[in-house]
Image 1 (cartoon, helix red, strand yellow):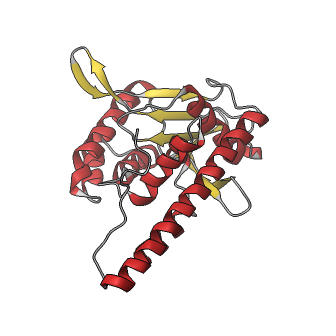
Image 2: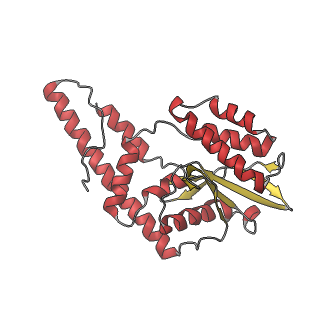
Image 3: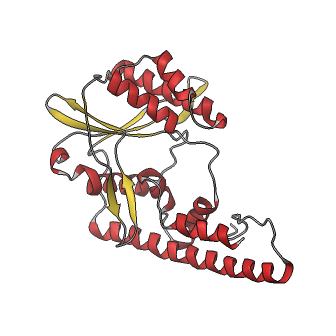
Length: 256
């Protein structure tokens, strides 16, 4: 139905949060276009929002592991219950050494990385804590695989700097970027914390950043044209054959 394509076109205008947006941006237009198509037409079986809530409650309220697992299991799709529980357990394992102080957080507003006049990528930490007289933003990503290229890692920390860490309160602050990918740990496949600290990756220069943004914008426009073409074909098919239950899918658009 044409209305499905209207929804897809609207989704194209609402980029996901920083890490997911960065995952789109490849070294060329074709592969970036393919990534955006997959995002627009796809629907993830679950999210990590329940796990993020549990981790945030640990940092802000000081809840224990048992309570955190219960919080993570309270909401979200059943398909993601085990993944969210594993994320929470991995965070608590990391916290045994890191020991984040609870009840020591501050409020903040979501910020935006401006891609163009009309398109902005949402950027915000999971929470901001106060340590040793400094504000420390904690950015958390729950992916079970951390397959970002070096360029994508630099792009991610660059947009965090541009949109959030450049604010007056954080310009001289440390910051932590927390990931919990699965890996082989002494013969056992499990999540383990991978922590980037502010300054671990070189920021992209202005030319590199502009080039990445331009690749995204060109790819986004190609996706728009693909969707408009498919929508016109669907309207014509409906005119000839009557309504169908056709659902747009990412099929053979860019065969590898």
